[in-house]
Length: 118
Image (cartoon, rainbow, N blue to C red):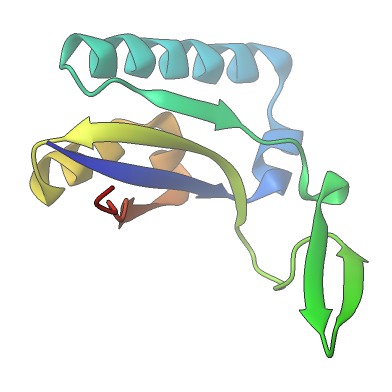
């Protein structure tokens, strides 16, 4: 098994346009995904993130700390949440990504977790 981070990118404006019933339906779909991933043995861990308006970006240049509000890059899609899954290989990680509800109106970036020997 290998750990993969599945980063969920969506346009926040999409969710602002949803009515409460649509939001509730999608949240329920995430709960179904969680249960399915657990049943498959993927040991899902994940969280939703607050709006990019709450984000702070930190940099250090020439020993000076620089902070800015929001994300560093201007993009149409913002990081909205993530899952860390144990998958047997990249093919299984891709299959799991296709089952995350946000994939229908955003994208899922899959990154293998680098394992360091201790």
